[in-house]
Length: 303
Image (cartoon, rainbow, N blue to C red):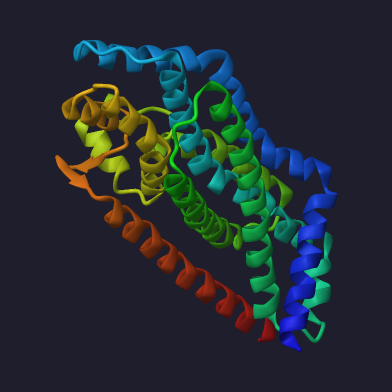
């Protein structure tokens, strides 16, 4: 019976999200703006950076590979950032219920408080995942037009990466927004996260351009590894193709190092498996924190 109530609440939360056209627009605006900025302004900057690296090794590449490599780098950044920013926005259904009163009605209904909280979490995860897959589809179309060199295996791993990133973003949103109950607080949080998160996780600018101390500090933050795993799989096929065309192993490493395909802490490279472990362990910690918050709030209501 409780499972049926859970499914009903999840369905209701998702319908509330998609019915609110403004909320849906706000969720999509960040990835769309970033894509627009890339195509109109930043594309040339990244292409020149790659060409400068190739020039150091007396290597030239076709435009489709360079355009695709630059596009894959930025698309990985967008996916990593938006897995958090979209989750923050789509979880606004929970805050709206606090403001408008439905949460009070649910608290006196024969539905457990834990079921209500779980329904918000599941609905937020599914909505965020749906939005992220839409962004991936748009980005994939762009890469297919300018130059597609992502192997099917890497693309499957990108889907796995997106699920991990969305889980991380959903848990971050659930924990933080558990303490927000006003529209002003929601707006402030969305603005803060949208403007800062991309910089503190190393998504908007390659970490190689930061001072070593700043790089190490950023790599302490778990969100950095959501960027790292996506970069590995988005860029891997392009760098491999460059190797087939004659770019040396050292040149391939410079490309990866310069654009965060490889992450380092104190000069030590972080392997891909360790990035997954760090990200998933962080998700586990956030999940425990979210459960404790839900249990504490439900006990407080009963008193």
